Image (cartoon, rainbow, N blue to C red):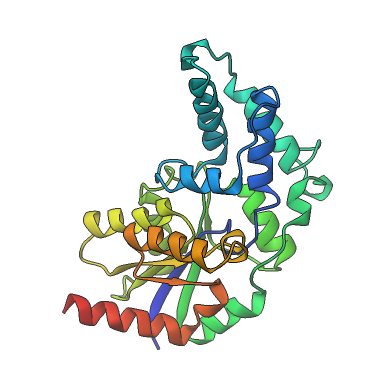
Length: 270
């Protein structure tokens, strides 16, 4: 029997809670390169990412550093900032001092809470939903959580450097093609937690309108913890960026929910 749908997942904020890891490393980096004068809050980071252009946390760190110095009446050209050194500092916070050996990673990555278990993906397979991952994380970091932590044997993954960064939909297309080599006409859902994720789906709709591309917003844990008012505001941002539905966690995106979302989308387009 054929596929019912394809589900593609972002990783950070969807599969794992990165509020105490990637986002903490981002804040550490900004604080270090602003001479301990500015440490961005979670709301500061969300506000930046809501612009849709800062999915890469190295770039986001650099941008917040520049904006801080601009607020101090310094131009960007006056800020002596070596991007490679910034990345190295960030990575040593995130991975630990041994960067290239996942068995030796002792940084913030080792403490990331998981937001889903392997059984979830087994349910998708049983429900005739093909699944894979498209993430802006490095391949090493993404596979560390998918294989070492969750226990997926051979997850299909498009990671940083495999495709242009979001909101460019190239990586989404690549993963959809891998998951559907027989080119069955089924809807493709992309579950992500940022404006850039939802904008990626909008661009996919524009570039390949012959398929159904559906954005599913997932509220990241730090947003859920912030309370209903902030969660509602964050949900509105995702919806404005193109999400057809926003869920409080990935576990709510069951095979039945996927089928219902796809059916509603098809009715709306019909």
